[in-house]
Image (cartoon, rainbow, N blue to C red; front, side, top):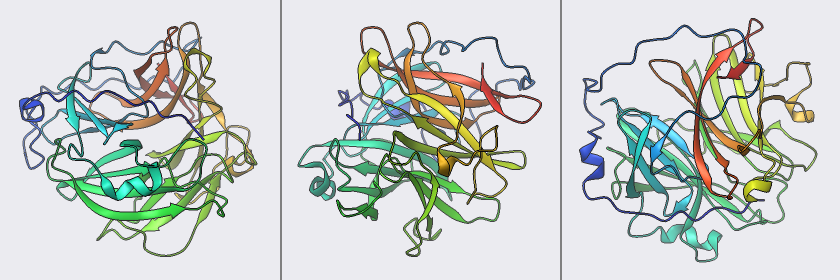
Length: 337
């Protein structure tokens, strides 16, 4: 149940090649960033987002680092908007994943080209992108998969429908996130409102659904929860989620929460031991000062630190890219700095 921001897609000629987007590159060409010691003491207040420049208007961002050492951001927008960066600071527009359109999605979008909440990652020599098609307030929704050898605009191939939800279902098939566990099993976490966040098993050979199982991993009894993102740190699987309302400009109440489990299938609990499936969640980042409604987060393991990527709203209602680094306290709970 969200209003998705339609981002203007500005096609920049040869943008992807200009930042060395060859996914088959074996040598990292970007200068490595010196590893930093991960802090264990949270700051006294929420930090502002780190400095970013250029094409930083975004909604529901997800980031991957390429084998060449550069970055691709995929985000909600017409036919999935792409941006790129060589340094995780300066970003430039790089067209759309599907510049010729994605007609296989229009059954779910009411004919709109606006596609939501992609999840981009790199495996087996190619990029995988799960993304959703829906309309505001409806759970007549679908999640699709596309793959690409380079991640560049126009290089993506539709691999088909992964899962759909209908108005008779008690879940909503949007906001996908792929997670591959330590045993090599593939899971797709997804969901928004309704009964909460769900998990299905995927076939690693195809990236598509492998069976009919459906597991609830987090929920608020029909309340505002969405945007799952799973990330393993140490011996724990951390489930990052967004609570409350996005998409209302400076009035947005989105906030970033987390739970953890020793299994990728849960149960996930917060710092107090309350299960996320029962409404639990430990708050990591919320609105402060002129930073409103931070949420729809993704986590990236980079050479200098683990990185939290999200969107937030400025005082004027514009949705912007937020980036912070992640630390862990002595009990193993994450914070941002």
